[in-house]
Length: 245
Image 1: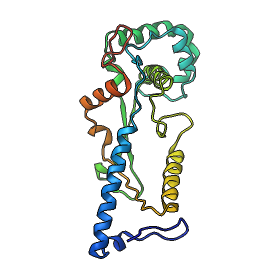
Image 2: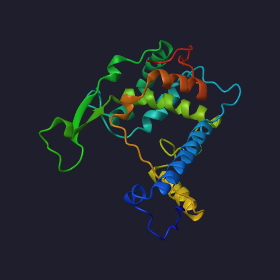
Image 3: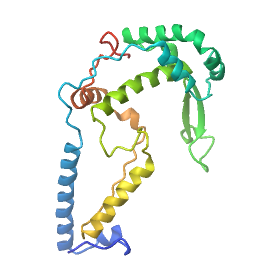
């Protein structure tokens, strides 16, 4: 059985594939196994080899200028937990920056993220039109964190992304959370690979996974191990080799 086609001809529907003859089903199973081996190998090689000596042992001490420039780039959004609106903070940041910088550096040095920075005001938003508004599962919680919490996160992320970029540790095909990349680049990549497979006369299948509460399914021990082995990040990364918790 040859499963092939062109980009201009409709592909077989799933029902057509499932109800093929037994011989055809065996061929399909063999092709599926070959495809599984291919993607396992691809997944294994997708992790970049970390250059020798590339490790992030500490987050550099933040400066007053770092804080001032980051505050001025913040959007004018505020949380109910903020003592002053963000637009007011921008106007007086030259006065407050030394105190904010000291607080941030102490947080990193002592491996402690201030508890007040974790307090959020929750706004329930209906996931999509047509859902029962009386059912709690129809809502998605939107957390509104204090602006200083977001500011500290941005400053640390900036150093982390610089480290990953300079050491070429980000997967070249990653589209999420990267400047100049988006869902459009991810779709273009998938479409390009599918068209190339069809042009070669190969069988192309697209599997999409949507995990419910995806962040809650992350195993923290595995995550820390992956960060340490693949990306050279220590579990304690801060100005004094301590990381915020």
